Image 1 (cartoon, rainbow, N blue to C red):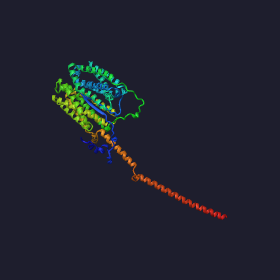
Image 2: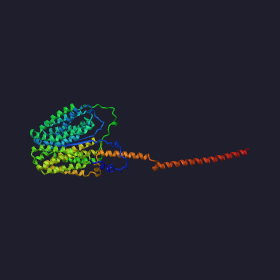
Image 3: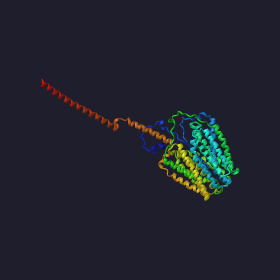
Image 4: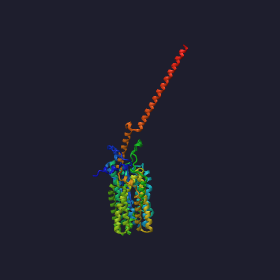
Length: 538
């Protein structure tokens, strides 16, 4: 096994932007204390992605729910939350899977159906932060139960739609509930278990979202082709109603409030380990451009592969399932590279997406299948890397940085279908992958502007960086203490001050002696005059 100290410690001066400290004994174990990094997880779904950022709690902190719930109930609640992630992810991707069937059933162009994805993403952008703030003081049981009930209502409205306007209304209602669900599901899952199980619990939630791409989207496609486009929405509505009841029964109620809690005892908000507003804005620019590139084509991928590439409609569910499987595998495989190589991983994801759009633009059956594999892998890699890159540079607390990142991603998801709709309506579907290719290359060009010094600093994991910074701080404090307690002869300023004081005291003593001599002479003279006066009078 490679000794990482030989790789990292020589770069300490460059990493910390200071001269190396003089050699001394190694810092004590407590010198290497560091704050835990937030958990970042991103799972791609068809045409989009779900991302969570969760600050790690101190190891000694336990929530009331983790102390009061039985392990069985906590496990059942986690399963229900994962199922909620599955149904919400499947509903989000339903427009992509069902766009030809919806267009045929409602008698509208496919390009118009794609605008439903814009309405969904725009609602998520506008609703996520306000709804999270409004429901912040409510119990998770009430909030999530009500959220799934509202979500189910929106899905029922979509399932009973006889017009495009009613379908759009149902999508907007379910999108608002979707935004609130994904804003609080990760903290809720983490609160059910001890701190060392937080990451594992959040991973289970994201596996539910991953299953939406592997299983949910293909099933929706098959059901829409054979039973009509309303049937998948009825199935999702039934699952949503069951989950709303499950949340009400399994999730913990409101925790008792501690009015005597000292605000000073609350942990400080976690920020990026390399906070930089210009670099964070660069990440947002790449995120927005890549998201627009993705949704411009992928919102209309089903009609594209059937009409342009000539792939049979019966093969589309298999193609989508293949893409979901590849995406999950790529997400798991890319994890070990994010801590040291976030920006190169972004470049790899953009390169894979560029290859996908090139393959899709060829308009052949084999190239369409190849594009699906490249797109799934590239989008999964890009989502994970962008989220990690953004959280390392956020100049604000991670919850605010994650909100800004999510809003940016969904803004691109709202703009892309509009761009694709305009291009498809005016020139045809064949132009979409070329437009996505140009936008993806633009995102790659923005990525290439990253500062090289910052790239070298990013190559060191945040935990190691904080440990090295803590060690250097201890060394600086030790050197400062040695300077203050050094021998006076070795401190020129102090020595000069002491010499000045000695000279002042010597001068003072000389002045006193001179004054005393003058006084003595005056006394002797006075005594002489007195003696002369006595002699004269006598």
